[in-house]
Amino acid sequence: MNYGDVEESVQRAVEWLRLLVETLGAVVIAAGIVVAVFGLVRHALNARGTSFTPIRLAFARYLTLALELQLAADILSTSVAPTWERIGKLAAIAIIRTALNYFLSREMRDEQASEEPALRGRATVPDAPAGPGRGH
Image (cartoon, rainbow, N blue to C red; front, side):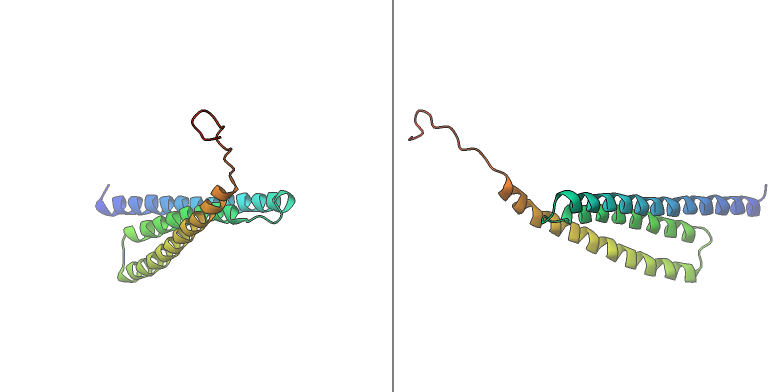
């Protein structure tokens, strides 16, 4: 087996791996869509008038994971026999996907932070029983 054969075998293996990672990203998005649709249907039937932010946040987590998988697939496709054109495309894609991921993560964090006080406000803590030395 010469160097050309080994290089070709590695390229084929990486291409299959890239295809697998891209497929995994698509499966994650599909799973997120299914979870979001079921959550929205359940919300429409049971929780009228309440926020559906938890459903959005759950879907955003799926999208964040899918973006990371897609970026990994792009890195794989550029890792074997890279050209300056492919490297430039990868850089542009990485910047766009990283920015999307950053803003999506920031929105999830902001939404969770704004939901926490509302959730704490709904929780009721029973009054402590009056006992000796409690003034009642």
